[in-house]
Image (cartoon, rainbow, N blue to C red; front, side):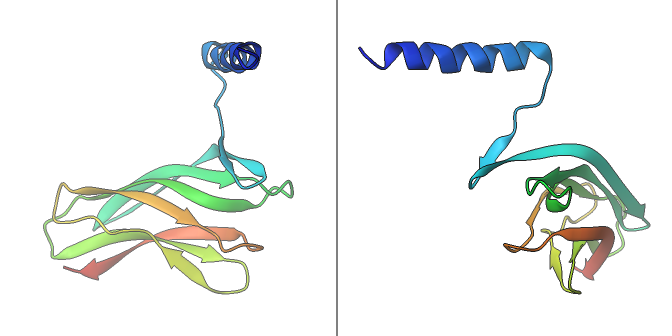
Length: 124
């Protein structure tokens, strides 16, 4: 019974945030992940769109969320490549064949952040 007031407070705060239209961030470690800035890319193989996600207080993107879609029956399956400060990159899952979509869920390694992204493809 002693936990009931704490649960009621959490529920009240959650309900207030939902009804205000504010985004609720998912926790990632000690800080919350806030996905607030939109991005989109497209080319002849497909399109992708989503949000940049931040959590390090320095204003650097540490995650990318979204969807990639194959829009052309050309044997090329698009994916999102996200570049990391320091010169390396991470890739999302690819989508294909035409009409297929895949989630874009890419996280920067600990201590690093993303600088840009682009739509690439593989032969499939």
